[in-house]
Amino acid sequence: MAKILILTSGHLCNAPRPQKEAETLANAGHDVIVLGFWFDPELARRDRLLMANKKWQFKPIFDLQSNHQFKNLYIRLQSRLVKGVFKRFSIFSPELLGYGTKEMLNVAYQTNAELTIVHLEAGLWVGNQLLDKGFRVGVDFEDWYSEDLLPKDRVIRPIKHLRVLESRLIRNCTYSLTTSHALAEALAKNYQVVKPTVIYNAFPWEERQNIDNQMRDRKNVKLPSLHWFSQTIGPGRGLETLFQALPYLKISVEIHLRGNYPESYRQQFENIIPCEWRDRIFIHPTVPNTELLSRIAEHDIGLALEVPYCLNRQFTITNKLFQYLQAGLAVIATDTAGQREILSQQPKIGRLIPSNNPCALAKAIEDLLQTPSKLSAAKEAALQVGEDKFCWELQADRILQAAEYALSI
Image (cartoon, rainbow, N blue to C red):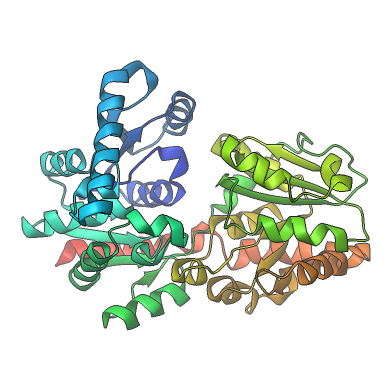
């Protein structure tokens, strides 16, 4: 069996796709190492918990927690400097793609794996450097990186360089994955290549055995409950549409949002929440991976309100949609090409609505809630589809086939 290295750019607990990839490959007998970075003590603690009793390893390339203040300050100042230089002079540096990019490459050289699988923007640069040295490289396009982010954030994004890095990897890596058929077709058309292998961001069905059946989020279990989550609560994620939809709702519900809630966004969001709804909107912090499914399962409807402000948002399917199915929630999703891919196959799981349309969102919520049987049917359909069509157990074989083919040539 082969030594396989998986590279990501942060904490393991925030990287569910590399986790599942590592688990699948290790269970097949491969020697798997995942490398990332540590920034936050609580997330590092969650990483350690995740690693308990695993057949594979996770190691931080370096540790930028508060107990390493000098290194932390140096890396952050370096990042700020290269962004300033790029914005003013358009001079590219790999540090534009993430912290510790060159250190990631050095560790990859030292590991000397038989297959190195790269994720995220920094991985694109590292993967290209490894190809130059004759390494066998795989790439997982979790996103379309050169076509991502809000317009204001693209000012300091090295888009041309990302396109060059993407183009070479997708042409030269025999192990090439992405998250939806919509994104695979868009990448293939744009770069004139064969479609990457599609691996949905589904989750292991066996995790349902660990649902704790507790009510820790909900305040009034007599009211229907809507749930939305992401790593960050902020703009461009459809929450503005949700808040604008509230005056049109005639049915009383609880709304639960989960994610990091930066102070910079609080005032902006709270200014658009109708006063009469403020006691029914609840903000929750992120929870460890082992608890997330339990907290999602408390609720009735999962909201996937993606806004297609860029091509990446148009074509990807976010993790939350698959976790709603795994938890047995009815789904209300905006009509992006990625999300349409799922709901057009399985329309009984919920409702597909236009983006940025508060009236359509309110109507979809009321349509599901106006009779208990409608909501129950959608929740039952979601749970069945989650088990029969969109669980990780059905994706794992494709991962193994892709890895085995890459290792054979």
